[in-house]
Image (cartoon, rainbow, N blue to C red; front, side, top):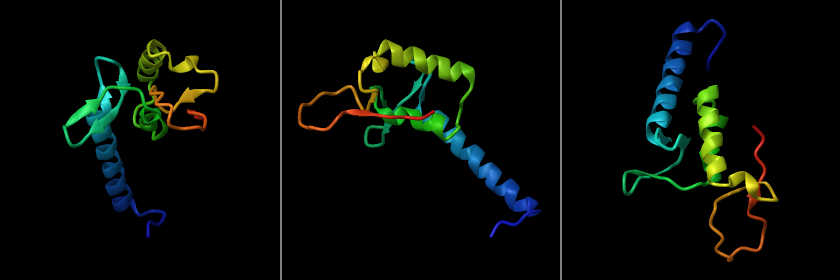
Length: 108
């Protein structure tokens, strides 16, 4: 159990958090498009399509700098993600298979 004043363990978990954030940045960020994406582990590549999961690195605080957020807003605007009347969609695929609303609410 972590206790107040347990500096060695604080340092240990701080390092684990930095490694975790670094790995997320390396695996999920696409510099060219300026956004996070899902990662296809079977094919070892980013899935460069919009899914609502691209917000999770921001939610987790991996990189919330103005530059990153601005670049993501540009990407999302170019994909017309903000144009849906019910809010941000979970994806841009409309398969017609589902009867519930495809939009979700995200509180950032």
